Image 1 (cartoon, rainbow, N blue to C red):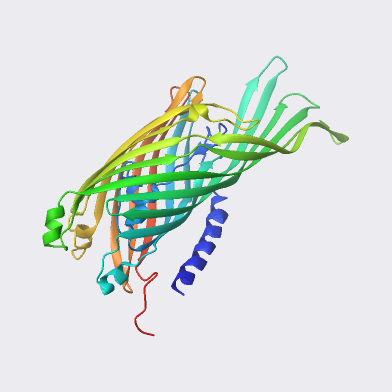
Image 2 (cartoon, rainbow, N blue to C red):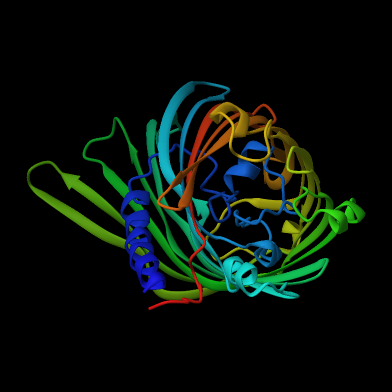
Length: 445
């Protein structure tokens, strides 16, 4: 019964994600290249700690960066995230401001052994397991602009529009034995990319307009494995008093395997000649339907460190590499890829560890920074991004359970040398609900 009460709202929420995501209107001028503007999903903790934390673990918080964290989970964790983004985009000719917002993720982590059972049975579980489900974006395509130019015939107008994106539904499993934890994620990637273009000579009459529509439906699977080794630095203190908070150092490795995506292309290109009010002549230039092509997502390696000092303060750092130079694009795609590297780090502080103080004392405060270079090359210039992050989380108890509100701020810059520059400010909102009654053995009917 307990599981049923969570699964049904989860399914309804998944449908809600897509009904709202279709309304996303962020302007992404580089999303015509590759698979669109690539999106990474972070937990609220990682969002505020500079996008790092693949080695970070907590008993009540599922970390989607590493499926091995499920082995440390002791309380069911259901989360939903939303972000609001304001940015200023500039190129050599013009600049625009853009405001957008969208649901960013929906996920749930479930420990398969209940910690209350462990207390009631007065025995320690040597093996712990966890299961997770989540849905989140992989890439987004969203732009709408007009290019006015001229050639030997006269002034030209080109209108370009892009929409859609790729998403992933993920199922994860984690297992922990003593100091070592391992996990596996399997993601099903699906979605569509739509590119439209209208071209015509502005001053010519009667004139023809050329229409180009290319749509790609993508699907495929992507596996990911993760590992965490945890060393308790004050184990002797634990032996004397099990209520003491631990000092721990975590080392992690996450491997996202190269994966194939099948892209089903539908394209129609045609020309329309307007003869005033007399007639319209339409000539099909090209038509493709069910044109199957394969593309690949690259190998990605992420190594991380996490230090936790008695749940009072800590630090995290990640370094990641993506082998984009080996990726292949689908037929009709644009852009060139290069290998990407990312480095990120963050600090966190909780003034009072026991959770019984004032809201300001029991909240967790976070700060971080990140730098990313690579993945996309435009006119021999490399895409770069860097930023600073801040955040806090506050936990509230209700009906014997708990909920956490997360707030994060991000200030960043994205640039492709002198071609295009973007300064942005982002607000990340997240809600986490914890329930410790899953798989609880009832003692009384």
